[in-house]
Amino acid sequence: VLVLVRSPLPRLRALFQRYWGWLEHGLWPGVFGGQSPPWGPTLAVQGPDLVPQGINDAGESSAEAPNLLESVVWMAAPKHRRTIEVNRCRRRHPSKLIEIKRNIDVCPECGNLKQKHVLCGYCYAKVKEETRQIRMEIYKKEGGPFNAPTVETVVLYEGEKPTEKDEGKRIIERARKRPSWFVQN
Amino acid sequence: SGAAWARGLLSWARPERCLASGSLFPLSCIHTSTSLQKIGKWEKKNRIVYPPQLPGEPRRPAEIYHCRRDIKYSKDKMWYLAKLIKGMSIDQALAQLEFSDKKGAKVIKEVLLEAQEMAVRKHNVEFKSNLHIAESQTGRGRYVKRLRCHGKGMFGMMKISRCHYFVKLVEGPPPPPEPPRTGFDQAKEYVQQLRNRTLVHTL
Image 1 (cartoon, each protein chain N blue to C red):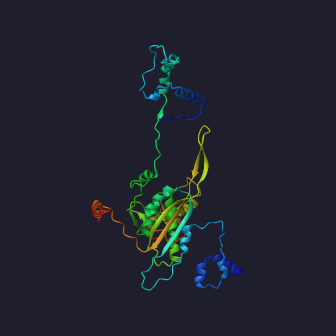
Image 2 (tube, chains in turn yellow, purple):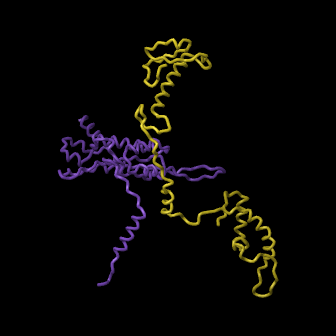
Image 3 (spheres, rainbow over the protein chains, first blue to last red):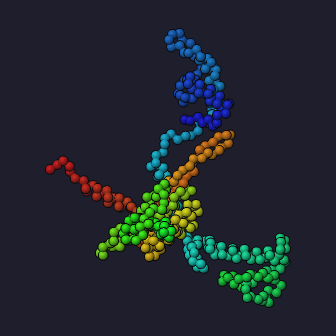
């Protein structure tokens, strides 16, 4: 069992040294795992089996020691090194391998790959770029923030005239041919 | 002589190729890379030249070896991607890598596209889709140790890991996957082992 000491702060270091001293002197009850008889004053016997003199002190100090020792947190630690065979079994288990995706299709518009539930990345980028250009034209026309008009906007490409439906709308001109995917009303 | 020197610098020095083709430009036999840059074993595999095949022999499929060195990624994480595309056709592999969220997927995709282009240009492969991935491996690159600062003035040493990625493309459709070993196969093998037993040290 490992006693975890986090950092060598002076207070913890002193505490640790005290516990280590107790351990070395055999005064730590926790070492035997509760199998030894409990400490305490016993019958004094004359002869070579005399218990050492320090038992009374040990008895007094052991009364405090368990309270302090029980507050120390015993952390779990690995006992043996995991072999590479065991590690490989865990790392290469089928649940950890990457699954092959079966939801990849071909986009009918551009022919790039796309996921079934997601928009085609190429077509989206294409539309995004055109939108950015339109927004730049709008910015040029408005000339600054908070100048958006209260009417609708219509985007016209080269060679297009506004129809009677686009009567009261703001017209944004784009200097290119109308893209095939941007259908005119 | 300046033009000849430039030609020598541009054309790769491959002594066996020069001698085989009966080249008239001996200057192209000088090597252009310095001896300090070690050419890896995988790169050298592209240089082997087989003797011409006899008329009756089946056509030897083209093999293309390509690799990328010192990719800033972990070799263990890269291994999962290498394992994914092992044995797939190149189109399927590119599709899987395109929609993978891992950082190494982008790198491997670039490597595969480079290898595909190399195959078509230099290795006499007719159809760029007719390739499959025979081998795909990762290797440990050069690690660098750096200090990582924690709180309270503590520090740890971290290692910045790099990896290499190796791929071998072979012409032809991908081989069919092995059928998984069933209990019946294992039982058959066991019975066969029992039947193979003989009596030793007897008449």
